[in-house]
Image (cartoon, rainbow, N blue to C red; front, side, top):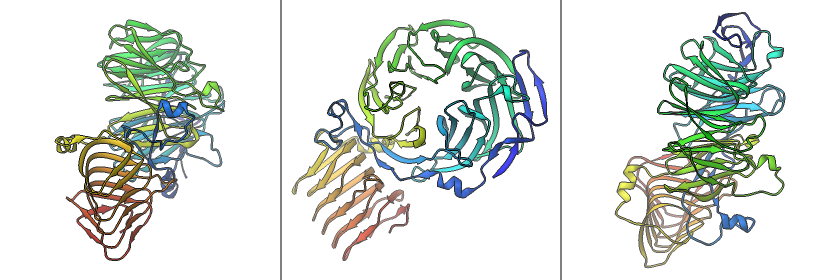
Length: 547
């Protein structure tokens, strides 16, 4: 452990803003901010114990009390996989941290942590996600006397919003603060000091960076505070009753006020309009909003997610919480956060899980609950990833496995797959499909070509003298429920793309594996078992050196 300066007790240079309630300072001698320097601890933060194929429980399955996610029926859309989990940071036996917010920029995800209850304790993680098969925690910073509730990266700096006990701090003039921390190549750098700003309110709960400004909201009796990005001096501070979050779209600022609803401001912070929302947002709980075209999606607690027309302010629909799980307190069956990614709408519903819906243009079609553990407190989605903050389960990194544009173009001439989740190709059949589907069982006795993204919950069997060709992504099993891929005598598997097996690859006598192109990737969590005379040809990246 490297101790790097005390947040509120050390000597520091002060810059006072126009508000008597705010103070900005840059300090060089902190004791209560601790940087983790143990590479072993950072590496051990990544867990693959539950990685693999994720099912999605639809309304029918849930109505039958989850009688089995492998039930017969049509193959489902959205072949999601859990890449890995990031274990919440722990410091000297204090295991109270839970993930509270995620921001994604380029190859890195930035994660904020806070603790439940009156004690202040927080942390920040930086995670390298450039290799989807092997995410790495590259930096970790502990705040021993402060919660970190929101985080944003921009141009070499992390901006963290949080809360501190101002009554026990010599320097803090308010509980709510923003920290500006240097980060380079995935490493938080505290040697240059950390610049702070304070604002009124009990807890800073959200932060955005827009041009030369940093905007932050704080909760009860708080404010929207606008900081100068260069030195974190305050440019403007507008009091509000109970702000929970903000979002910015084309220079338009949307604020979620738990007392009234959505307040829409222009670039000069003048009120343009209000969207009235009469929902119980809870006491001192974070709720989020998300722009999706002309729609603005609001997490509204027990009501689920409200979808509003941004231009007219009218309510378009409510997306309900799909389940009311037994043994979960009602206060934890609430929509805490929402996120959208193209047609996908995600709802972090606490103890009711992570819900996925599909925006069809007019309204949202409920797809189901993603097969994750833990209470889902926050969700963020960008590019091909979903990041779900899930209490003691930590941060869960999910891959959407969308086919790339070039792959979609390659597959375009094939028929789209529409059929059973139990795929059986009979001897003599010669089939070819494109798509992105979730299978339950997978058996090939004839000839099959799949182009796109595909997952298999159970085992995959390519039987005697069968041919299976795959261009794209193919994932089988889960690490805590391992399943094998078996290629029997005379069978041929031809791969161009990514093959991941949470189990064994068993290649029997006379079978052939062919890897096409130069970019194929094979990620096998079990073993490669080659019985008798087998043939493996082509170039591929063997992620775990199992060949």
